[in-house]
Amino acid sequence: LFYEPSTRTRLSFEAAMLRLGGRTMGTDNAREFSSAAKGETIEDTVRIVSGYSDVIVLRHYEEGAARRAAAVSSVPVINAGDGPGQHPTQALLDLYTIRDEIGHVDGIRIAMVGDLANGRTVRSLTYLLSKFRDIRVSFVAPSQVAMRQDIKDHLDEHRVPWTETQDLDAVLPQVDVVYQTRIQKERFPDEASYLEVKGIYRIDARAMSMLQKTAIVMHPLPRVDEISLMIEIRRLCAITRFDGPIPCICAQKWVSVLGR
Image 1 (cartoon, rainbow, N blue to C red):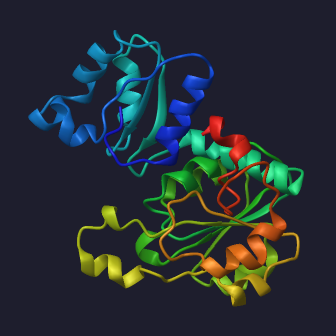
Image 2 (tube, rainbow, N blue to C red):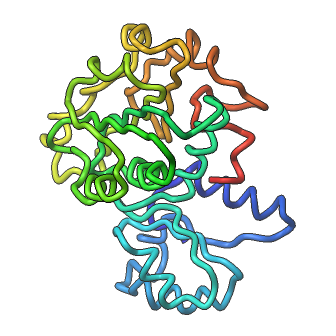
């Protein structure tokens, strides 16, 4: 059940089920093309749909929707993104990518960059990273889309050091991973608010030259203008190993498609 647009997440779940010998069914843009358009609640939809399937993969525009669905479902519910809340399966893929590229997760220094208030991937990845040793996190975002307080409180509770800044240049030489995200236009109340922060951080040749030689740049996609197309050719491909035909963005490894 996908109430928001999706390319990689939906297709990877479908591919996984088909390769495991199962079948899939679903609805595109359930917000408009299901009974949700008539006012049906997520609870009522899930109560019925859980009788048709063995597992439900749910993407929804409301934070907490997956939890609500799981409370009434008779089958497991996988959270494929709930508004600006969480995206746990993407975080598992991101964690795998970090370990595969760097060789370990303990001890990494990571910069979370971009729309941290609305980006669900950065929230889930931060939660996962807090389970490892000697992690240091830098949040890089304009004040309008800074990381929300609940994540900072979580890091404090787990004694994970974190810093917050709007200066990307100051952070780049210090980190092992740059986790770049787009400014999420669809979550802004109006065009003017979005334009205030659009394009504020961009990974280009100058930014790449400031990184350590062993550092990697990750992006959960979709990308708008946060990473220069030329960078893919000049450096991202050079520092990233790919096991098959796939986009030159670290977070989108073909070998991991079934994990998303």
